[in-house]
Length: 360
Ligand SMILES: NC(=O)c1ccc[n+]([C@@H]2O[C@H](COP(=O)([O-])OP(=O)(O)OC[C@H]3O[C@@H](n4cnc5c(N)ncnc54)[C@H](OP(=O)(O)O)[C@@H]3O)[C@@H](O)[C@H]2O)c1
Image 1 (cartoon, rainbow, N blue to C red):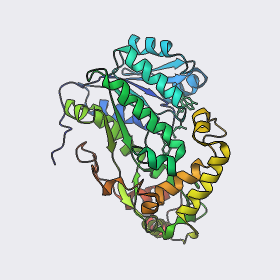
Image 2: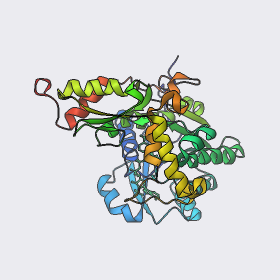
Image 3: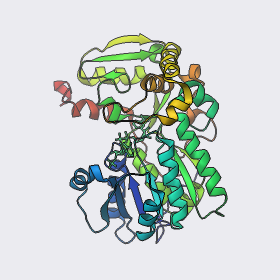
Image 4: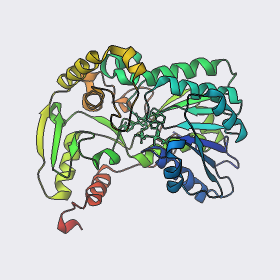
């Protein structure tokens, strides 16, 4: 398959805005834009980071202003007109949402502002997880994410009346891999304590993407006219690798020189327990109203259901096995580099200061 990332003399959308850039994936996207600018000095992205006023000082410290980067504050995302004015004033052509919130109303207001601006040509909703394209599966296995699916439905609806002037792309990545592996118990692994929750025996294949690769995928959609056109109105499926928990465990043990303590877990059991918590909370409408906070970033049952969906394979209807079915991966079409599981695990173990002596 031919790559569609052949550099063009100018970018389809030069002025891009990133929402939530101070967060886990947002900051990687800013870095990927800056990397693009370093290697393509004649056609750089002009990056605007929009941050809530409450985070402004912190975000400014994270991203000092430079030639092609500015940080702007916004009080909140509740006022569509204010956001529309900002988008117009800065002639924003692509808007990349990486905000943490599951609050669909916020995202829909941001979409409304983008359409109203008349300048935004591409919208990336805050997806970056398991495949949310099938509403039935989401409602069954991952109700917290049905709001993401509703955002894409809304994007389909509003974009259809714009004659191609306003488009969207939803980036699907499975599990954040290197980021989650370094943190205790985010995705079942706790390398510091050499323990792991092993789902369904650990041999189920799942999709995993390093955060740098996620950011490259977003930027690749904007890096050429052809990629921009091909990814319009698409779920864009990417990964770093398809792996299994047992492959990851073997590499952790190889590079630490220590054994992991394994706790077996059944994905359907996990999913059922998550479901009970979610039902007790009040069903889908309760999710619509749920507001995340720094102390409670996830709704009850969300973490357990995410874990079940990531590792549950066939038992969870293959919700995180998208490389194994049509339309397949976009990696090659977007010119993404091949990544290596072993190098990634070694890097995480080294980053945690746990590399065994002879590997130092
Ligand atoms: N697949 C996976 O394994 C995985 C893992 C993690 C995240 N994700 C997905 O990636 C996306 C981004 O997650 P993240 O972990 O990068 O997020 P995050 O770091 O928790 O937060 C991102 C940014 O969102 C803004 N924000 C926080 N709360 C907000 C609110 N209530 N309203 C508006 N903005 C708010 C903040 O930016 P400012 O303070 O600058 O405004 C924050 O820095 C989400 O869709 C999430 O589901 C997937």
